[in-house]
Image 1 (cartoon, rainbow, N blue to C red):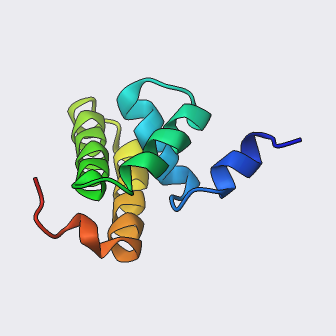
Image 2 (cartoon, rainbow, N blue to C red):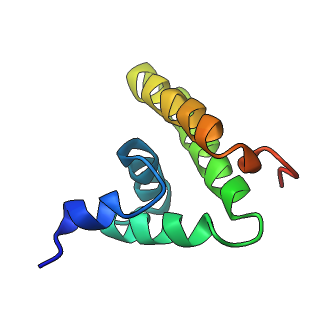
Length: 91
């Protein structure tokens, strides 16, 4: 039987990146993992994921939530290191 951890581990995204998508889209982590994996394979999808994480950072800063902003920034740095295509042709 496949469980939640198996689904999250099958994506090309980290847990922090999946959590950022879940927060941004107001969805559960499994749905965020599915959405993130899909977006990583469509035209301009990686750029959209990068934009989501950046928007989450801005939202955290707007609410003076520095710990969340720092965690999201770390997730963004890891995302860009693992997926440099997210920088090319940024939308």
